Image (cartoon, rainbow, N blue to C red; front, side, top):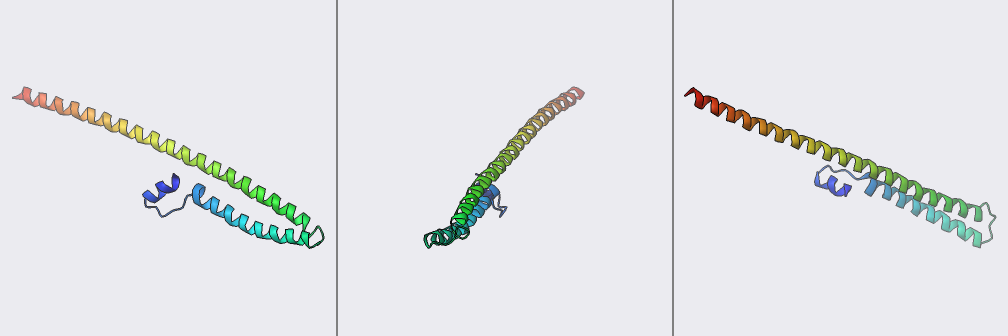
Length: 121
């Protein structure tokens, strides 16, 4: 997971996708649930719709929006992370190929130098 990689790298950072966004959603929903419970009590107590039923519907809509937006944000963050990982892997493989090619050239040069030094004897 992304958070695991951040922890292993010793970055002391939190993952947007796995920690920050879910925490924000959780806290936001907790507040909205409290407000919704109060509005539902107002409905039961016979308060006007502007203090009860309308408020309950508005809060339910807010909770749905929070869940949808959080899900989309997590999806986008995950896609960005996966894209960075693919690019990192591509660069790593590219570097490995370059390093291997350099080692091959170094071996050829060393062999050529040995042959030249043996021919000079």
